[in-house]
Amino acid sequence: MKRIHQEVLDELEALNGDFSSLRTTTYKYTPIPPVKPYSPTEIRTLREQGHYTQTRFGNLFGVSLKTVQSWEAGTNKPGGSALRLFQILEHNPQGMERFIQGH
Image (cartoon, rainbow, N blue to C red; front, side, top):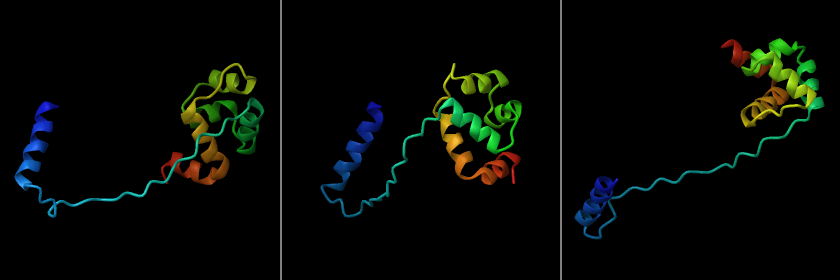
């Protein structure tokens, strides 16, 4: 880290205060909304609306049947990644299926 810091200092010194040759880049930042929490009932409804069995729903999210059962029973809560995927499935079920199938 000290070496990188020294290299930056050396480059700045070589410019002799003339920063006109430096380029800047501006990035537009679009905030990502927080994940929506899903209740056990909402998870089950989402699964049933997609006509998924608990096993297939688990396969869709890369979790076990027991995990899906615990989400729907309310004994376990899905984490952030699963919650984000629930949002995607809820708003674009065909897109989610196409993505999973590789189309």
